[in-house]
Image (cartoon, rainbow, N blue to C red; front, side, top):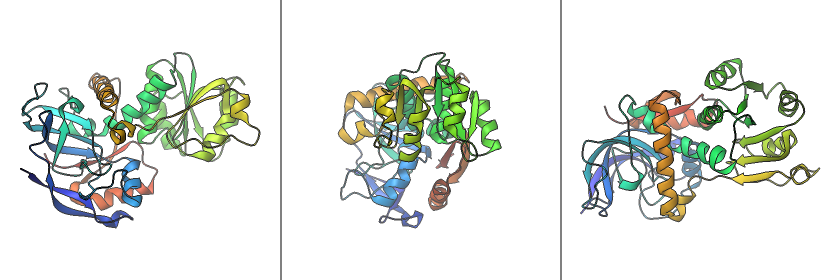
Length: 337
């Protein structure tokens, strides 16, 4: 049996123009533990642009439907599902890397173990925008770097979708937070989220600023969300035995071998790894992280800033906005009321 739904598919690789509306067939009924979700909202992430431009991680004959983050209402459940029921409001991070369809669609089939209940008072747009970034930042700062109260943290791209979540989580654990920004508006934004030190990286040397801010000691934990050049420069801003987490892949050391001499610990965080490799225990752990994040959202201790909203049919415009950069917070897709 199968279930047909309207979706946005990639008709090739390239720019936003390769995104087209089409009807696709979902594998429903799926397994006993699967759930059919009627989507209300989805969110964009930089990885979406990567897969659109270069192709999916998992090659298959199925149409490529992008989108990892989704929120909606349970429509039907598999025979073995007991933790959710039709009518429940849920969010999740699942699909969108090839083979299994993502969330650029009116419906999605999701393992019940990946679904997280949306608390009362949290809207679908905010719930859809949360999962990937909270998983990424939680693993980066808490699980991998073990950021502690009183330590100094440096968040690159502090006003972006990932950065603005990282600033908040660093602040919530009691760390002192610096964030690189490009404008006064973004400086005000990150300060409102808990940053102690906005650093205007376009006009000031962020290494000098970080060293002055820490009294010459250096940064304990840094999150790189920019790339090799910024990360290599960050080596010089770190305290001895500091910890760096990169979302962009590990570059070589700089010419002075600063990372080696300073005895820095470098972590790679790629939150799609469990989905790519089918690591069920890690996927379950990620869902539990989303549960903790959405509880903080419901309690007002965390926020997801929505920079812009687009309709599903306007996905090309949404991707153009994503590629233009400079967005404060997340871009979300409204799918249904």
